Amino acid sequence: MPAKTVAEYLEALSPEDRAVISKVRALVNKRLPKGYEEGIQYGMIGWFVPKSLYEKGYHSNPKEPLPYLGLARQKAYFALHFITLYVVPEELERFTKTWNKSGKKLDMGKGCLRFKKFDDLATDAVGDAVAALPVKKWVAAYESKIKKK
Image (cartoon, rainbow, N blue to C red; front, top):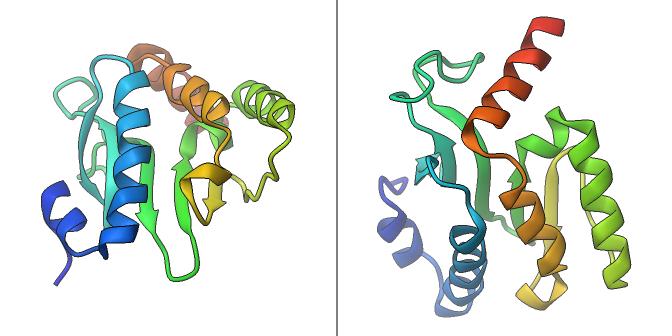
């Protein structure tokens, strides 16, 4: 049965996986701009713009709040889903530059950062990407992208 709360999600993980997810969560929550909420979204831990701040929600499912970031344990890796890096090219460029300075290998799709252990992360790059977009700036960037489609 899918987790309905962050606590349930964490409880379902092995102790080793829970430790990694907990470290990443702590990093995200430390750098997350005010206004975002944490919960379960799309079967993973998610941070999103609450409907009280952006009632339109996510365009592909308006019942869901607008996602900002997702964190999940997949079968072969952990994943941070940065929708912001997919939507805002300047943020992707900044993230990539900061990551490359770390000397760590970047394993990433359009906005999905894959890693096998916490130490694989360039924490400065991740933290800066998390902190980059306050709610109003993220909503404006998102709406601008949606209008272009």
